[in-house]
Amino acid sequence: MAAGSSENNLFYSLGKWAGSQDENFTTEVLAFLLNHLLVHDFPFAADLLKKMTGGRLQVGAEESITVETQNRLEGDQSDIWVQAQNHLVLIEVKVNSGVNLGQLERYRELLNKRRVAEATLVLLTRDALQKSEAIRRIIDFPLLWRQIADWLEQDLSSINNKSSIFLAAEFLNFLKRRHMSMEQVGSELGPGIKAM
Image 1 (cartoon, one colour):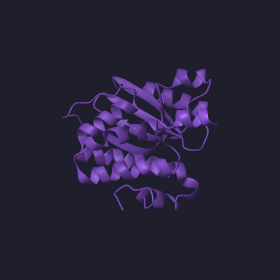
Image 2: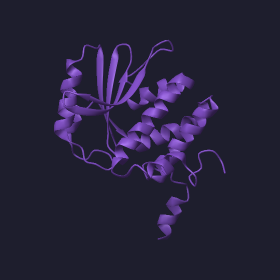
Image 3: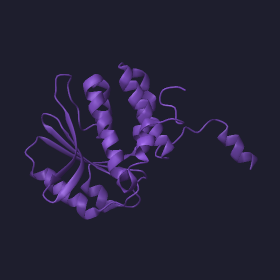
C-alpha cells in the first residue's frame, strides 16, 4: 500500500479516538504538520503559511517561526498561533461547528493589542462563508480546508524530506476521507451531465 493511501491512514485512525474533541484533534494535526515542515522543509512550510494567510505572512529563510495551539488568552482559547519575527497570525479553526462572531471580535481585539508590525486573523472552515459581511469585516483571510488540500496536492512533489512527504500525504488523505477536500473533476463530467 502506498504512503498516504486512504485505506490505512495514520491521522484518520487516530482521529477515531478524538470523539467530541474532533475539531481540537484536527487543529493539532494541522499544527503538528506545520511544525514538522518548519523543521524539515522550511521553504515548503513558509510557502504554505504564506498561502494560508492570503500572502500576508512572508518570511525569509533565516527567520524563526513558531506554531502553537490552544493558547488561553483573556478568557478565550485560540486554535493556532503562528509567530514570526514581526508578524502574529491567529487561525481560528472550524470543522463542524459554527462560526461565533463574538469570538472573532475578541480575537481581533486581542490581535490589535499585540505589539507586532502585522497581525492577521484567519478563519479556516469547511465551507465558504455565505453572505457574512460582519465576519468578512473582522477577519483578514477566509481559508477553506479544501484550499489546504489543493496546495498540498499540487506541491507535494516539491517536498524533499521523506518523513515530510509521508506526513503531508497522510494529512491530505485525512482531509479527503473526512470530505474536507474537493476532488478534481475530470473531463468526463461534462458529457456525463449532458447524457442525463
